[in-house]
Image 1 (cartoon, one colour):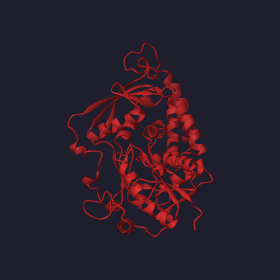
Image 2 (cartoon, one colour):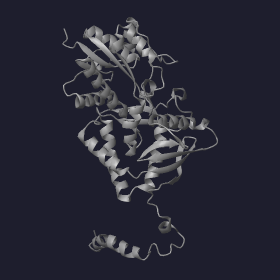
Image 3 (tube, one colour):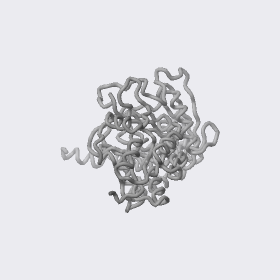
Image 4 (tube, one colour):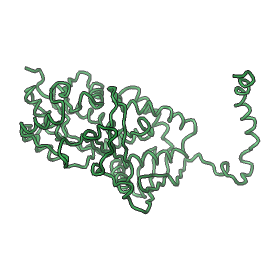
Length: 405
């Protein structure tokens, strides 16, 4: 008999977590509390409640929380203040949602006096690390149940057979038959893994994409969008002030219409293997480009370069599940300090899969047109000064050159 009496399950209502719910009841014979996060995945969440009720979960033990604003305000926006990209391409849409889910799992565990938490991440993936590092950081004594590391249902086909045997509805069956894609969605992105994507030679089928039109089918006319910034965050689009999650939702709509934000990536997982996934991140792609645009006129050169130096480390911390670590928090303090004067507006041009910054301005701009001009600057800049600067910087190379080094 297990010593776990009550467990909080991160529950989406999909195949994996529906099987896990029943498995926990059978294997651990414990009371299950379900937590379903509304992260803006664009799906009706009420079916998750109905599925939980069907398997005997008490109504008071079913948590369906709208965390969209917290997700964008406290996780996505802080990440984008650092211009965060993992391995040069990935905008960390899955990674950045996990620390928030871990936080709510722990909060609900304390509220319901649960003995453990559980998740549906596989033993091959990164999410097990992200969930559990977050949970241990916030609740050091927590017990974690990871069914994929315990059971023998180690394939989609076995999961579906278990579901059929136990009367569990299976959603999102692929129209061509076989197991569905493994998908993750939130306001920042939607990801696809599995099926023929496991062969990196195979191109993703067009019917797979959900948020974006193909660039070839995007409108023939470009669209211009103005983003207003305060302290490094977008607060208004085309003059209309919006809440954080509304900003991202609107940019997703605009970017998706113009075929922006598709990515086919083979990434290096934390557990050591390479993994191929496809991602749609239309709003995030626009945010990244626009933020660099406003920083280009408001950040000091060396501060901007320092941020660029630190960004890969920051991105790796998020990817590897260290959002709640002391080092990530310390980096965030520095990053946020640099954003105090990142204010103003940026105009972006959206056209057939591309986003380009075409104009920007700020009351805190460091751009001085009287100095930068190619016309007569009235003595604002003495070009003769450059000669001494060049000679000083060349001195060590001239010495080495004389020595044949």
